[in-house]
Length: 227
Ligand code: DGT
Image 1 (cartoon, rainbow, N blue to C red):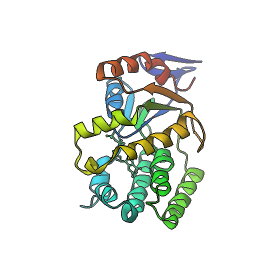
Image 2: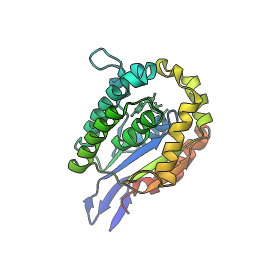
Image 3: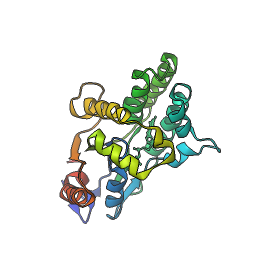
Image 4: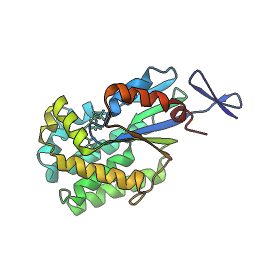
């Protein structure tokens, strides 16, 4: 039997580990969500390795990709795939792990978007896809629940303008709309790709106060991801 005691998951006296991915558009509030749950004991929070994508041995593949996606898309996606995989296979030291995005969304959302919008050459996409398929076939990528922070692209656009990250200044609303549509097809309509775990949808257009309230309301559902 599984029970929750002070944030710990216990099955027949043994601690059960669970992995939760926080998914959503750019600037949907994933970091805030992770920060909120990081205050709970026994939860390990893994944020996206964005700092690595902005500085790998002195180079900035994220910035390069936004400047010239056709030339640098594969470079970034290969590195994102590697750094996400590195996070997925880290041994777990706590009963619950929360991760910002996943190797799946890197492929099914971002790489797909580059390809579909004609910005990634077919050969680049084919090579990346073979890598991805090999990885998910041969390496265990555990996940028990996907929390989807569902926003409107317009909200993300407003937040993006406010935070003013240098590389992201070139992002138009249409880019966020494409990412949004791919997420909806994947996690809501189940129209595109395999969904590797149940999905909990949290509306995320609200202000901070309301968002924190929703996280608290959903705490049990999220932490009991294994039931
Ligand atoms: P948050 O907390 O929801 O505001 O999340 P952010 O915006 O801090 O983090 P996120 O994941 O939305 O993205 C950081 C940047 O990295 C953003 O410019 C989008 C970009 N990015 C993330 N993953 C990928 C990927 O797989 N491919 C590409 N092309 N870009 C990616």
